[in-house]
Image (cartoon, rainbow, N blue to C red; front, side, top):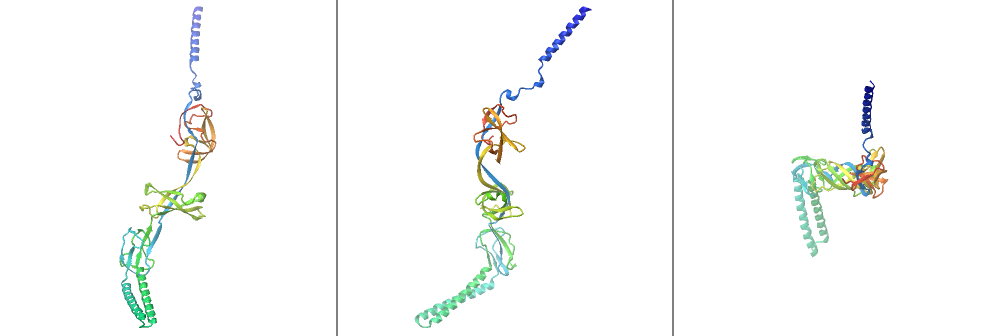
Length: 357
């Protein structure tokens, strides 16, 4: 019995020793992989802090207005005799668009012209006789007065006839014809509209907070939903002298070249007003991390990253202005920020320009 007992004890001891060796040889999963900073340094991309001209823009909605616009009306009561235009025609300054009935005035004009010509001939004859001493000088004076009176009556009838001609006061595009031949028109009856649209005026409102930045000559860029692929460029010509007390905004007027007459009065345009450029320090947008109200970047110093709290300012696509916390020439991490922490060793793959890929 004692031999069997000793043999069993030895077997149990061997098994316990084997289990102990296995347990000691197994790796502890709780230890995990080595920390990143203890192995090869992380690979990041860096970018320098550089000076950049930040251009601020003011965005608004504007309405196109004709440079000159008028509704053409008759000056007196009569019927339309002739219409010399079609809807949408382009009219030149002085062009006769509508003629009113003028038979009576034409007859009076012919009579006045005959009287004037006769008075002119009588004056020449009497002046010749007066020069010879055949008639007194007073007769020549009376003949001259009759000639001047006939001339005045003739010019008055010419003026009345001209009132029966509706002319274009300036170059522009005509609207719809609102009368027909034979229509009885009276003073104030609208015959058609005339718009000069080159250049075209663009009126838009800007909050009073930007009033100090507004001045003549600022560049304006506008777009219309009717022409989504086209940008229209102009400049500010005036700022209204008053601020609307309800909206606290000022009306700004710009002129846009419109030689092909693409833009029309009443169109709605989105406006982008370019303000003066302001110099500042810039870093790529991806280099700045925001936590609540605080912003920070990782600066590269002697192969390691140092977390710096910064103050940000203006923004452009891909760029952020740094108003405090960095100096020109400093290097910051632009890509690869996810695993970084203060003091971590890193290696730089390349240095990218601010805003670059």
